[in-house]
Length: 200
Image (cartoon, rainbow, N blue to C red):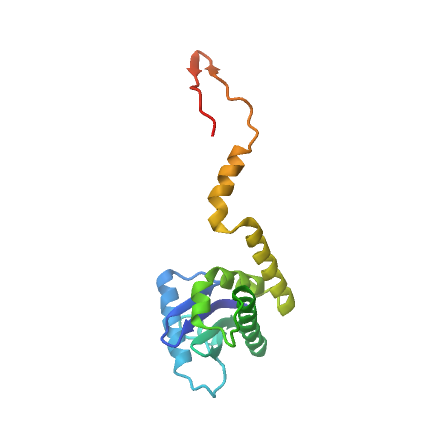
């Protein structure tokens, strides 16, 4: 099972953090620092698997990572996960990020860069949720993931995005079919007179 997905840059600045096991916030920060120190000091030509740090479970857990350009993609997993399977998953996530950003921004990215993660955090989280949820891998078919992301993009465009939300809310209230508002409300001995309200 996947315990955490950590993406940080060459300087240890977190760009995406997702824990699938509860840790207090200060413990999460320590795990991120320890993981960065374990992964960043390794040479590029060594194995991409290592035992988890002392904070995340020691030898019962593994850190599986890839270093792309300025980003480290690190998966903290228990011993039941396949190292090569997780490496393939990291490759898949990076490829899907790149392909989705190509379609949405009409640009060509060869590698996922930090700015993609910073300026499109909502899409990054959506893609990650299509692939992994609750620490379990849900989908590894790239075509299916891209199809779901495209469907989400079409839904957002048809709804007008967040910028159109206030206008849609006012329109919905205006179009509501409410029965006529009562002018007098009687509750036992209490008689309440309702003032007239002007229409929208």
